[in-house]
Length: 230
Image (tube, rainbow, N blue to C red; front, side, top):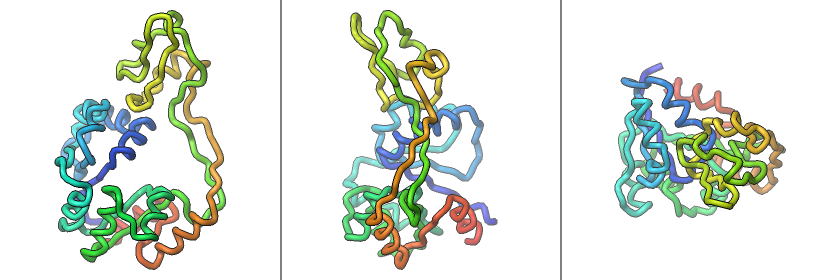
């Protein structure tokens, strides 16, 4: 397998979701210097939500896109000298918009512009040819806590906030998935709770429609095999 440089692009929403599941927290405990990865973020907004702080510890090369219109960002990225583009995961909302030719986000513009530029594109839809999927939830607060009974300093990232004589407020946008609050207060916080998500037939149909236009992956392992074959 050739060692191509890999550009990992995060939308704002995608970066915050990855952060809640502990992705950047786990990276911060690794020394990834001199790797072929580069992280590119849709905006500086998410880097200010602890992600930048964590990435500095991991030595990953990262940057934020300039403040340009979303469409311009997509055109600029898609016309780079890329070997391929892989969108993973791609939500059912984005899949539905792709089938209708709607490109109102950075990720959709990258895929649309990339297709027009003749790029090889693969997608990994969240809802794909299956009836249901088991998903694990990130850290969440199960019940309220009075500020006088709870030490908000257990979270050094600012995900827990309290005011005098009020309940503790959980701020998920600042959660990095470190699980310190779960360890300290297991009865009040939970993580890795499993839920069953049922895939709608319309979402399965939309995924099938895109199979003529994009390479559709049905398992993460297929992505690795695909990239290895380039």
